[in-house]
Image (cartoon, rainbow, N blue to C red; front, side, top):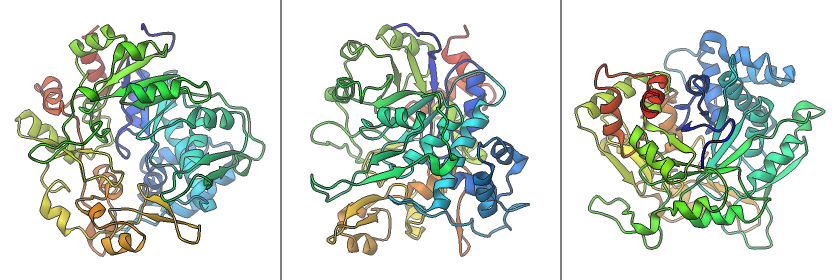
Amino acid sequence: MMPGPGMPVVIQGGMGVAVSDWRLARAVARLGQLGVVSGTALDVVHARRLGEGDPGGHLRRAYAQFPVPAVAERVLQRWFIPGGRSPGSPYRHVPRGRINPSPALRDLTVVANFTEVWLAKDGHAGTVGVNYLHKIQLPTPAALYGALLAGVDYVLMGAGIPADIPRLLTALAAGGAVSYPVDVAGADRTDRYAIQFDPAEIVGSPPELRRPKFLAVISSNTLASFLSRDPATAPDGFVVEGHCAGGHNAPPRGRTPVDGRPQPVYGPRDAVDHDALAALGLPFWLAGGYADPERLRHALDQGAVGIQVGTAFALCRESGLRPDLKQQLIGAALAGDVEVFTDPKASPSGYPFKVAAMAGTLSEAPVYERRRRICDLGFLRTAYKKPDGSLGYRCPSEPPADYLGKGGTLEETVGRKCLCNGLLATAGYAQTRDGDVEPPIVTGGDDLVRVVQALGAATGSWSAADVIDYVLGGS
């Protein structure tokens, strides 16, 4: 399928917590491809940027464009620290998400998502998307509405079955109140749990907004066929993400074999039939190990419109990855001395998660064991039904005693890492508690060494423009 009007050949992946920030997305969009901001944990990211004093004044510049100044002002009053927090002091606490969030969290979520998209779109006519994880459901309606207010062009979502997102986008664009279903462990078929969100509580009289295109991130023909068969659930296209991609991966299909490490082993059942996918009539992009000219040509030959690129952009100069970690990883990859391990236990979500082995990070057993287990952010918590019918929230990365007290099992807690705090630290927003600083965790694709050696052999550094020029073959 050839790219249609406005369809990018290259999608920049919406990576991590603040790795794909507005600067990276803006750089890619200005070059004619799809720049994507990560929507994960944007409420906490923005609260911590405000806690640093909003260096450069970028957030406040965007807040001045928010359609309801009083809402933006409430966010500033609560989290902005002129001149930044004092060295070694903790960031101000952001309330954890719940099915009925506090007004302060709702305001922060809307404003943060508006701001990240607005900054990515500022000063050019390129296209900008935002990426969310279906697993993180609680902020979704408010986050989407903030992005729509800023005129986001694409919404991308994976890590689950995003069947409700097309309808949600249509309703939010029309300014209507929405009810968004939430997965609840232990619920039976008669239970109905949903987040209620009304744009009128934010903007008064909701304007009619442009509905963005929706791309579902998938890894199987089964899910693509399921979403496509009903116009109410059908996306505008797919990103087909293979198990070579960084971050979260889909688990292998069928019984999950492991190798000697142990890490999941993928086989023929995990391959996507591109001909069958093309027969659905929707455009698709291939992701996971496609970041070079030859693999782009192969993707196009398979019927794809283009590719999604992650690792190469995550390590470019414009990304939000902490500079020292970026250079440490690039140096190790140039020397061929880095391993990316598909950890089946690390993520509280239950999905395999790629972890780059790096000194001083949670990939090292002593660093992991020294960290005091705490769940104070809770993005990957699971809602569960209590015996009295009310909702509780639990995370297998929290202290095991707490998790067991909420009906979880000890086995589920083994090897779990706090990705919420770890990924915030990777982007430079590590929380400090009683002198302890949260350690980072770094992810990357299986093609990490190849990508770094192709792009960084000369200088050890590259830009987003270098990535696009390389992938498109210099054309």
